[in-house]
Length: 207
Image (cartoon, rainbow, N blue to C red; front, side, top):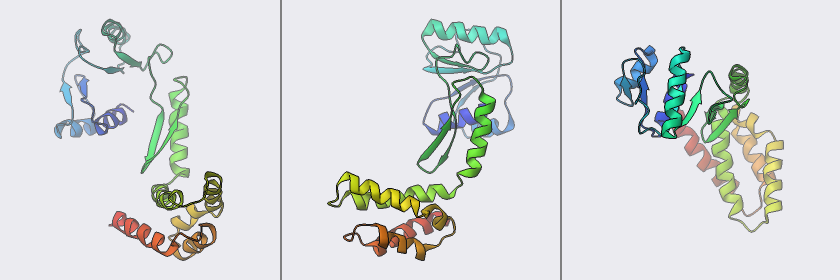
């Protein structure tokens, strides 16, 4: 979980500082790529100075308390592994499928349950959903640029999802997917062109 937090922060462009005498091998690879600062020692007073937010994730209650006090002193947002109720913020268990973000949170009451549910959802919401999201984005652009009102547009998307387009995309059944588009989309939308554009994007992602 610590590695996941660090990677997520780095991917968001955050300047990350890790204070620890040792780190896991996976995290060392991130450090070797110069994506974060590693202070290779025990935590010391002043290490939080200049930070915006902090994670206290040690196994030492005394260090945890020191980090908490320093965070309060510098008005820094703190997430404390041993004190979810006293934390200023919580990071929900989450994963991505392209631009779709799926999160699970118990408000810090049970991180273990959040992780378990996240793993279950990752299995249920497979990688094909990244493609589904991209497809629906193309459809949305075509639909909302038309003359239909918002209620009619809403019906279009509900009907598409009822047609189980997720299954069609998972099975790469492009013929039946186009038949669904021909049936459900407004007549002024070129379903053949829409499918062609979608497959161009899909093929590039597969390479």
